[in-house]
Image 1: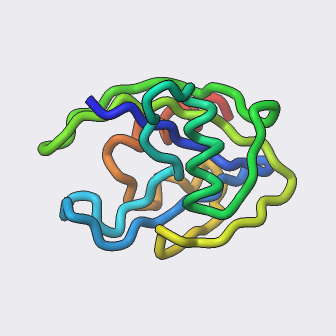
Image 2 (image 1 turned 180 degrees about the horizontal axis):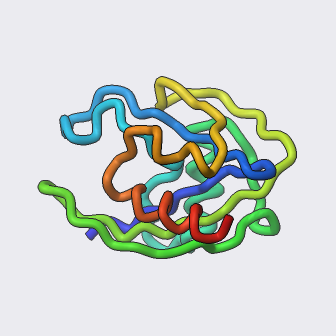
Length: 131
């Protein structure tokens, strides 16, 4: 079981969605996901998210801007993830793509139009419930 933190970057009713490139797992190639990554030994989910945003997006976020959305578990064919998701509230978000091939802003109502990684689909459902 891999412990992972994910950040949902929101501005108003819009969400910043990130598209993966090639993956060693074909079922993840070109799928949309919320950015984040593995929680390291001794890290809290929030601290992992802050570190991952610096590494993956060259972006700074702060605990004061995070609010927990949901936790979920998903079993992929080759591994399982325990996903901790946090809403990152912002008026503007400066970042640089280093690991993703694309990023787009979409309204919560348009989230279903994207081809999501299976583990992130639960987060999409939860976002639609709170809007």
